[in-house]
Length: 337
Image (tube, rainbow, N blue to C red):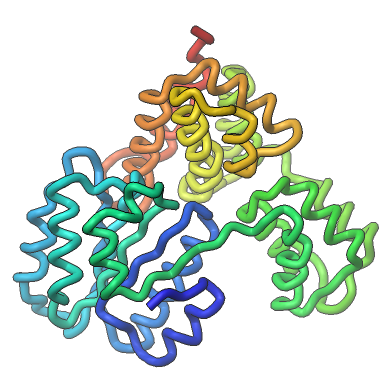
């Protein structure tokens, strides 16, 4: 069964299925889909949740071991398997096919995948998953539809504004749904329900905090080490949570991998940036970044962010802020080749 994200909550009221697959790169939509499944699991009596991040040397045998283990304290379990590369490899492909063919008792499995290339979509493992799983397809919001998306989000918190202001908001966030959602939530905190005046919205949007994670991403892409250090220190001084910095950095770095791959394959860079939803001034910034950074460095950075996320959530030992600082400074100081 294939569902759009908008259909997910209605589906979940009917009870959780044994297997879900979330497919798409949009960080906000991916997170909200996963949160909806987690909330449904709690409401339906699930009292154990485990998350696995598939990394380069991931041991797929632990999936089989998980299926054979018996929980001492929980009658129903939620198992999340995040595959950020979208490439499980030979062993992973076999393990995913096994998951599709035989459900784990008393367990709902959620597999999180990025937007897949044609080869992955046609693979035996993904074909097997599609036949058995509820597949949630995360569709990207086109730039032309972003004002309507913002209007719907405002309506959910009892607010509305003019079309001109909706277009202003869409322009300010440049297609970034995480940033758009952040602005909408800020308006909900600052102002009561009802109509929002144009001047009110502009003042709130332009009166940003001194530092934010999106500015950090820009400084890293520019290779501006001094500004990177200032913003990192500012974010820490303002009490920003390390986890809140992760998603914007993912948003900045993940499209660069696809664009770098396109460059190495001899494809048109401008087309690759458009496909990655990078527009306007961000294109010059992106060109500068891919001239400095190699594909290996970008892929390693994404893997490091996945590790830092575990540290920030207490799954791994370490100092998440220290690791974020090391990663950002390391990327910023790479000089053009």
